[in-house]
Figure (cartoon, rainbow, N blue to C red):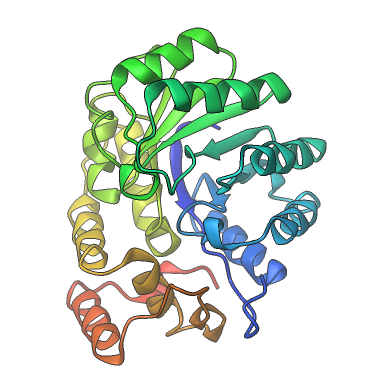
Length: 293
């Protein structure tokens, strides 16, 4: 991976809740064509913990033949260490080397020692892997400390290459040379870039791709920012709801493909969806202007 703005891309489902592989890949490709540096499949936004291993492998094999393959990346979303290693080995056969990996969820007493062991065992089985650590205490029950990240990087400097920080305790204070840091929200994109971060990996980049890219490019070119306030305002609207529910509800106004979610996830209620759309309309944020044709 390189510096830039990335989507935690959506997984699109058939009516029977099976993964719609073609539509999922097409949506990620559309987001990239609309401005993103890349898309990451099977993060939390992609319902990864709820999707079976076989479907993940099927998507990987299909994505390997896409012309945008080099801009596709994957999370694992597996609690099982062996399933995680199995999926990564499968992806590596298709030359997908960079992976977003969260510590196993469910058990809420994860320790630094246990998490270090989890990553070290993965690396021992797949020594050529490049890992973006996924720091999201809300989902995993574990929050990386600066010390824990530095210990991993020191032990595995060729493997631990970056971090997605959705707990927001690292992006301001973690300083490691040539280490990629991606906050998980548009509200921290510009601030993060100003202090040396690498960009963002965000769920809402599924719909904010052109605006987020504009903010990133204007920073890189040292131009006056004209879109950051709107980008932040849009993100704050989505933050009023469950992000996955809100994102799929909003995208479903243009494409019925997005109406299906894996239980226990659900779409917003009719009232919530109407309120969401109204708030975004008030910001002059129109879905037709922010999705590729």
